[in-house]
Length: 133
Image (cartoon, rainbow, N blue to C red; front, side, top):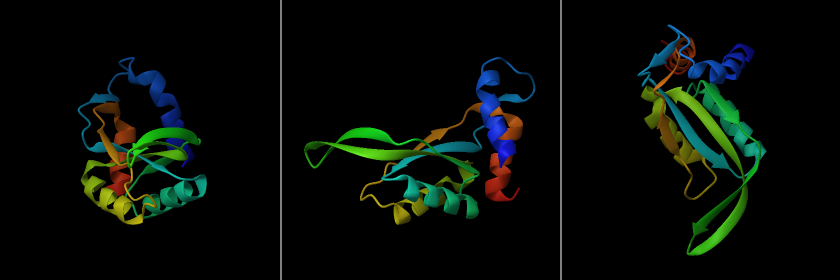
């Protein structure tokens, strides 16, 4: 997967620079899904299973952070591990069902963000990795 990671590392520098034919608008075939988990162990386990099941092309498990939120009328604080999931838009519904079924939280954070552009070869790889096309 180092090739994909390398593409991720360079994408930020080129994304806004009008990098030519590979910088594409309207790439609605890819969705970024955000969630968080209570610890790195559960985040890594989720990442492995989502990629193995082709529900995600790539999952970034980020460093632990502190979340502050309101729950049952009280302000709560918890250490959590944010997770970024890259998938094809065609697989989002299945991914959300999978997250609801397997997530350790009573009410898991699941937020989808449509991708409206990026390096076309990377976006094609995300779709191919999750749909077999």
